[in-house]
Length: 459
Image 1 (cartoon, one colour):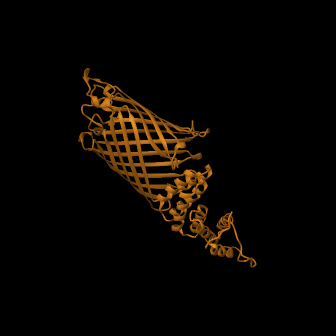
Image 2 (tube, one colour):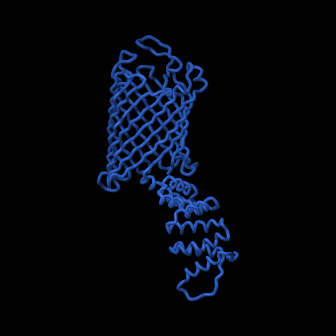
Image 3 (cartoon, one colour):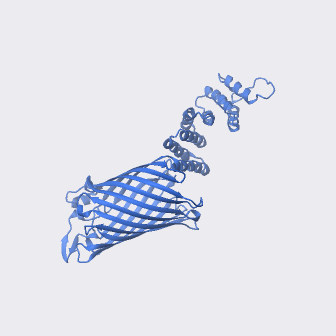
């Protein structure tokens, strides 16, 4: 290794003078590049940041792309509160460093300085970068913990969603081509039958948190979602001129929430939540419903990471297509999560809902239950979650039949998360779904198979 020879010699001698200030006078010292890096690293660990800066500047005069010197310089600058130059130097090091560990160190420095500057989104972005190049699980978990810590405390939270979903029934159409009303057969038009196609969903949500005291907080949120479809060629042939645009759906919501943390053991947190939601949705680009919803809930932590929840909801829907279809919904729910001895987890929930409306198509009472089971250990590298939903409905008035309509629906979904193929903490997610609704009015007998393709954060 060649000795360090450059204008940086002045910096080296200054650094060594500081480092050995209490030592006896010594003759001039010549050190190698590796020795200079090692001395800079030791000085940084010892908190001698001026020495680290002097040594690394000498190294960088010799080679501006010395990524080790850049990382050590950025670390010292960060420790001294000089976040802007620390970000600049660590970012440069990240892009030129050939080694995963060096990239990880550089990414963590950028993230922590961004956090101190209250640039929370940028800090999380760099933590994702650091986690994606971490050379071992322990360092990756460090990046994930810091990412999650920011997520819990940052005032603004933003989420995005995009997914593609091929489906055998995008319009919730009937399985039947002929229905019977009062014993008389009627042939359904093509657009009333199940139409296949592919759906694309795009969603974004943003939430601003407010601290209202030691145990209370509030938030204001915005939710936007758009779902568009493209019909298959076979469905276009029978749809009577309708296209995917005729089944497009969109919604926008404003949320206003309050959260009250209840006293109790730290490992068993309890919260009371109040949420007001105001929204409008659209169907085929036309306004469909204005609605307002009030939800009250209690979440109670239990031993070993388990939880229990209660909720009550009141919602008013004002239909803009037909006023008679406006409705008032009252519901109550209960839920429980379980941590199993084998490391797997499960959840169960039950909801009862009463819907009041002037329309016989809308007014009903329903009971629904959901069961989910998550496997802790990957299966062929995939994380699996199995969910079963059951819904039973009794309509309040006869419609298209002398007897009141009765429906029984079942929905089974297998979610497959593929963390092996993650990029910056985002992994492919596949949902395989099959749904079936049985009704004593055969117009409402429906079947659906779909595959949803999206991405999910594993942080």
